[in-house]
Length: 192
Image (cartoon, rainbow, N blue to C red; front, side, top):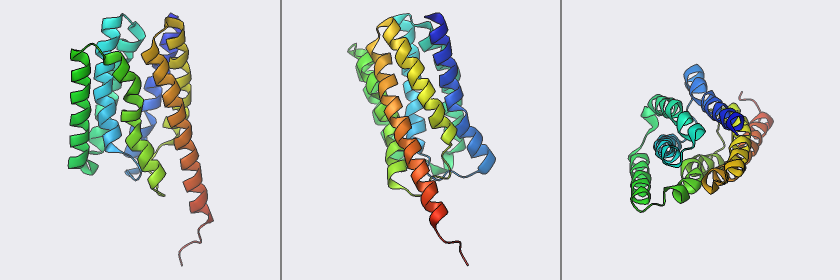
């Protein structure tokens, strides 16, 4: 159980690194959702509290470096952040605080995958230019979702299981969309 939690934690942090590295390397933010990254940072703070309260060491231990990476990525995208992004993140923070106050944080965190990655999924489905997205993030997402889902099954935690199942679906969908947009771009005639 400890080894599985450690492997899941490593996969989670490794999944977070390709996106900021790509942003630094290329400077191209096209197709990257700032709201997703802002919501991820807020959710990770909530997972930190949830992991501490539930005594799930791998859950809270991975949250500390994850928050740092996620905030770093938000800083890299600061020029793309809109008022709507700030309002959306503020709304998510209010939901997290309300759920914590009534003892429903675990249930809300199971839905956090949709809140965190819904904007990125929507952006990927709407846009044909996804050059700013790092495919490595989403390939590692499959590994991350598999390991956390398995860990959730071992410790019988529905919040962690829910994360694994939903993030697997999101990762696969975004990878398919990246492949579609790159294939379409390759078929376009070169400019004269």
